[in-house]
Amino acid sequence: MADLLGAQVQMFFPSASAVIPQVVSSGKVKALAVCSASRINALPQIPTMAEAGFPQLAFGLWGGLFAPAGTPDTVVAQLNKLVGEIVEEPSLRKRLESEGSALPRKTPAEVDAMVRRDVTHYAQVLRQTGIQAE
Image 1 (tube, rainbow, N blue to C red):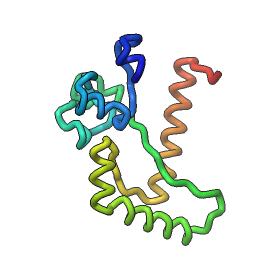
Image 2 (image 1 turned 90 degrees about the horizontal axis):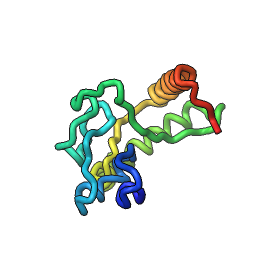
Image 3 (image 1 turned 180 degrees about the horizontal axis):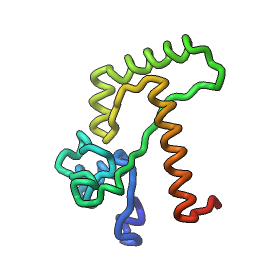
Image 4 (image 1 turned 45 degrees about the vertical axis):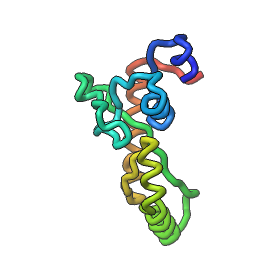
């Protein structure tokens, strides 16, 4: 962000929460598109990359809560239930959405499938592009 504001770079792909203050509050940055599959609540006027003509650039950042392998399913289910209740708390949900966070409810099985899909996808991207970890 500092390099963009200082004109050291002409564009970059930050998380929504990192750029929203500069787009909404200060107006120092112009958002061209969001990389998520759908528009985000905090910037509803900003199109998705697909809407802007670049469907191949749809991707997103996401986070999750993980437990050690072997954690009993009952404990995982209880944690999932409790975290789900927390993020549904209206004031927290409103604040996170205003910062650009989407809060989809996922089951542990859905998160597992997402992780496996992403690992497969990005391993293929690395192979195809020849990108090497440094």
